[in-house]
Length: 425
Image (cartoon, rainbow, N blue to C red; front, top):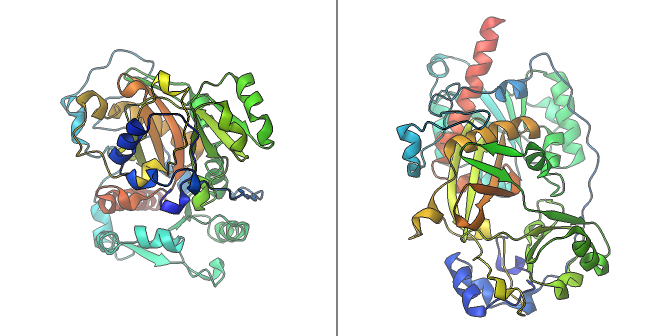
C-alpha cells in the first residue's frame, strides 16, 4: 500500500511495544495508530477476461531478448557443484549491477546511426509520472533512443512505427490493439506480451513457476511459502487452513493484482479467531521470520539490481496466542530503503549474485517476461534458504538507484540485437 487509508486490519495478539518498534523501523509508525477503526471492508471486485496470444512472427524480439546470456562478470554453476568465488563476488556488498556479456552499455553503432530506435510507451498517468523522468529521456536520447507517447485516443495501428512498445495497460481493448499492431508489424517487440503479464496479476499463478522450478544453487535454495487459495465462503477459511496444514501466523493477500490500491491491502492473522473476517478471493501464505528485511530484486532483461527494504518484524512463538488488532500496509513500498541502516551484517547481506542471475534467467524464460521484480526474504534473516513472496510486473523502477542508466542500457542492448539481425538479413 502506498497511502494511509489503504491500510487494513491485522488479526494478531503480538506485543504492542514490539510491533510498534518494528513498524516504526519500517517507516510505518504512522499506520500503527489507526488500529481497528481503519479496517477496510471494501469488497474486492475483479473481472478478468480471456486474452488471446499475440501472433508469432518471423522476427520475434521477445525471443531475442530472452536468449540466455553468458555473463562475463558472474561465475555460473549448474548442478550444484563447488563454487569458486571471484573477488567481485566476495565483495558482493557493493551492489553494482549485474550486466551480462551480451548487454553492452553503450553500443557505438547507435550513436553513429542516422536512424533512431523508437520506443512507444502506453502507461498509466501515475506510471508515466514516476518513470518517464527527464533524466531518462535525455540519457536515452544521447544513445539514439527516442521515447514516443502513444495516443490512446487514436487507433494504435495509425501510430508508429515503433521498434518497441512499452506498456502497462490491462484492458482487453488495448490487448486487441496490440495484436492488430503485431500483425501489421511483426518485427515490433512488445514489452511484455499480455498473456505473460496476466500470470503475475493472479497471486495463485504468479508463484507457480517458482515452485515448479524447485530452484537449487550451490549458493542457496529458493522456494515459496506454503500457501492456500480461498476463492469464496469466508466462514470455511478456518477449516480449509486446518486441512491444508498451514501454520500461524498467516499473511492474507488479495488473489488478484488489478492495479488498484486494494490489491496490495495485506493483513496478518495470528490465530483462527480472525479468519472469518477475511474477504475472499484471497491467498494465505505462512509468515516466515526473516530478520525484518526484504530484498527487492529488480530484473530488466539481463540486468539485475537488488535493494534492501525494511519489512515486518519477526514474530515470537509466545506472541501467536495473544490478541490485538494491528494494521499494516504494503511494506515493500511504504518503507524507505534499508541500505544505509545500521543492521546486523548477517541480516544485511544480500542474496548471492550468481544465484540471483541463474534464478532470473530461469524465470524470464518460464514467465515470458523481461520487466519484473521479485520480493524475496531470507529465512531467519540468515543462511542460504530464500523465499519469493511476490512478483510484480513493471514495478516502480523510478525508486531503483540509477534506474535511468540501467533502463537505457537495456534498451541499447535491444537496439544492438535488432541491428545485428538486420545486418545478417
